[in-house]
Image 1 (cartoon, helix red, strand yellow):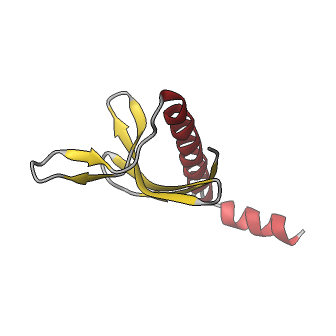
Image 2 (cartoon, helix red, strand yellow):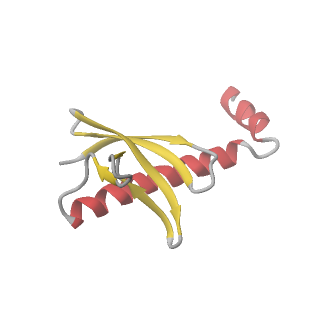
Length: 104
């Protein structure tokens, strides 16, 4: 099953870096994945709900390690690309250089 779209929704919170929506085969969407800054770097947390006993249960998750790796690699690559674009566009003078480039 191919991931056909990844949408990143950045957050400015301590450990939560972004919410993510992924689409499979242009036919199935999973919302509310999270990119979390953990002790060993970034990781993707699956959507979950809180149970009555206070624990959390995943609503959707990969069934094997190959799919988990593929999903995490794709999501984190999109997040890093989005972060670089945001960082680049916030640099002083970038807007003026972009406008000059687009008019030529």
